[in-house]
Image (cartoon, rainbow, N blue to C red; front, side):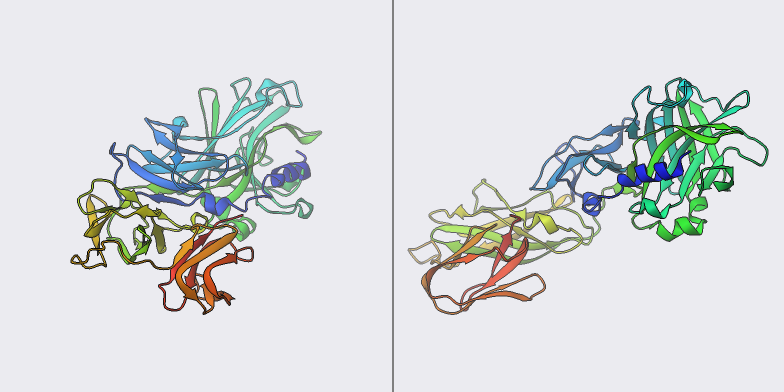
Length: 464
């Protein structure tokens, strides 16, 4: 085995994971879908797929667009989700609550046939799968022969998934950990979990036992996660809160003369061993605040703030006028920083007001119930004019390059813009009834526009 080459190839795949944490943002819906399934949303901007156990096997889920940068999907019953990001070569296998069967393993990697170094079909890797429980890590590997001999005369064979620290520098010669299935040769070598710090037998340190079996044409190997964590070097970089590692599958030929010689190796894959459990959990009613309606020349835009201690996503936030069956949806603002463990701001598109109306009815889902709120027409019912008088208008919203502020009255006081931390980020001296403000110096996110004598407006600055 050429350890330096192995580590280098593995770490090439562990060098670009800037979006990994956002990729695992998964939130459940607060109520079942119309089909009775459990819904969820997830941050998914690039190429990727989600997996779950469906009808007794791991299957890819169909996802639909929710808002920009986010997808929505559903499961027929509560269970665990996994995902794969193709661009980052990152996989989060589906967690298994018990010893996994082969059907419970998540796809890991394919490997070309015939790319092995020695003329032995059992050393030619074709595919790999992965699973994990709370206590153990599982690998399944398949070779061209479908059989896994460990010796032929005085030549021995080894089949080994390996693990290495992500983001390591290959020049630092980081340690490799392997689940080795091979022949038992006294105290020299045998099936086990090894720490590999060299290219010969003297570079092997046994950390614990492995469990192994052959199911059909697949070799199943597993090790205790506790055995890995008992090694101080492994524990120094492994983060239980974000358990990320890089892995590959290898085969080797072993002789007493040449030692361990690598025969085949799959591409490296970043693996996140984190359980994502989708369940119907709705213990707390969401808190709704800052309900507001902004009126402008016969039009209205409704907004509110939503927060749920369950971190659930409302299946709908919508409004209507009086008894009109027509519904207008409100959507979360600032998709780039959306986090349902925190307060989330919702806003509707601008819609036309009816000629006459009494109130705006707002409905927000809460499990099997609906929370209802009302906004009365601010103009007296005795007035002939049923449309609220014009106020200041801020558009477009969301905005990207420029913001326009239009007012029926002359604005002569500075326009102030604040971020979510209540820090003033802009102060613009103005004079006029229509002001254009460049947003080039503002990062994407949610901001508040304050103009003296007018209500504060929320704006969303989108990425350029």
